[in-house]
Image (tube, rainbow, N blue to C red; front, side, top):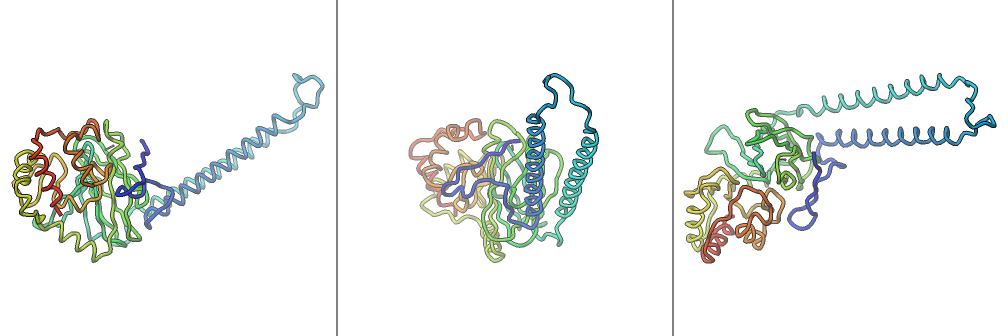
Length: 323
Ligand code: CUA
């Protein structure tokens, strides 16, 4: 398992970190992390101190190789074993109590999101029971603040693992099964997550963002996602390029492009990042990504599409109109 932090600059936001929590679910785990770390440090200091004291202890005999008389040191072994056992038992009980406490939310979630891990991005589908009220997005998950969200995790190709440490612990996304977990954010904000199961060459650049909105902000975002993107009339030429060159892998709501191999790009301009939250979504990076995706994320499954200069300009103008 790798811990990889994104850069802290600009649109990529705060890097991945697990030493503070931003939810009632993550906070007990964070306290446990700090508690076990502190206990471990104390144990190391005590052992190092005793070892040093033993090494510095002057030998009574003039001959340094002579054995010291037995001073009854065996009882210290039993005292040490007893104290260690109590401390270990305490951390086991603490861990079990924390795991039990964060197992299930106190109220039933109202929002369910299906998240599929792909090499190397996250497909995000908001479930509603009614297909007309469902939509797909990628790599950026919006949730309403202050309520638990049910997540259904699936592996699209190999095993991935979903981890947004400031909101919840890890859960694997495994092909052929659905793993349920939940997240919750206590305050509005944006948090970074990371695939935490090695899944191939671009595992490190399989990040994601979780954006916690106010309830009204979330409702507005959801309604906007359900609508077709209002592509500008000026972008019609670019839409034709997109449909013929990109539509087998990518989808945009309301167009002939309905591929599902790559991320759904409806409302692409609403996202802050590209390439699974590893790059900022700005015009320069988007143009670079389309021209040569392999130079930015080597080994990724996006092919370099042969386009004329005019086609590429039209395509970028179209993508930048997808609000
Ligand atoms: Cu997906 Cu590591």
